[in-house]
Structures are given as C-alpha cells and as structure tokens.
Figure 1: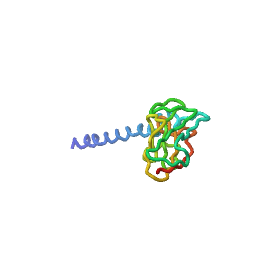
Figure 2: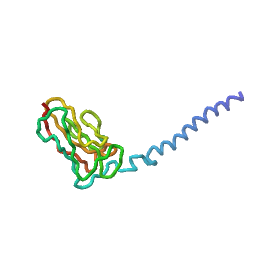
Figure 3: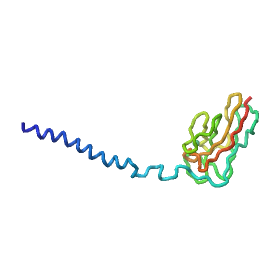
Figure 4: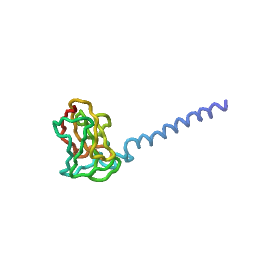
Length: 159
Ligand SMILES: [Cu+2]
C-alpha cells in the first residue's frame, strides 16, 4: 500500500518533463534562430551588362560528336563551384531541355550538365540527330544569378 503513491509519481514526472522540454524546441523551430539561407541572399547579384553566350557551335551548324562547345562570358569571371567570389559563376549546359526554374539550384542530370571545375570549353558526346544547347550560369551554390544569365538556345544537328 505504501508503495502505490510513489510509483504513480515516478511515472508522472518523466511525462511532465517531456512536455516541458518540447516547448522550447517548438518555439526555436518557428524561425527565431537564423538559418544558413538567411545569412546570404538566396541569389547572387549579377552585374549590369554581364552576358553569357555560345562561341561554338554556331546556330544551325551540323557537327560531329564529340561536339566542341565553347562558353563565352563577358562582364563576369569563371570560378569553380564552392568558391563564393563576387561577379563570378560556373557554366551549365542545358541540353535538349527548356531552362530549369531560375529561383532554385540547377538540377544535375543529363540535360543539365554542371562544369563546376570552371571549364570554359568541353567536348560533349551527343547522339546523331537534332539537339538544342543553352548555357545557364550558376553561382558557387549552383543557383542562377539575379538577374539570371543564360544564352539564347541554339539548334544543331549531329551527323
Ligand atoms: Cu553547378
């Protein structure tokens, strides 16, 4: 009989502690602590007049695979991915696809090829047939700049 009351207290106290401990966690999860995304704007500004363009191949050109693709960039410099230098970015080739959403990191797949090492020309393997190519510049975190920098899409034919 004398042990019945202490047993109920022992069971009740940990439950109360769990409820109290969850309150501070809930309030901090609502955004009182700065998240990494808030420390820097989501998108890196691009300077006025900056431009990205394809040096080769030329629009409408018939080429053989591998295709030499040369990236042109004026008003900014090329820096490898992960290097947050102002007024820089790295090239992405959009192959046979429309531009991805420009307010999100650029996808990485066969239609969105990253050149994070800072390459300015590449040899691209393409199957015979018609293809479209477009350059999209991304910042150190693979985000398009603000305003975004992309070339006109070009159509080519691979023999
Ligand atoms: Cu990238």
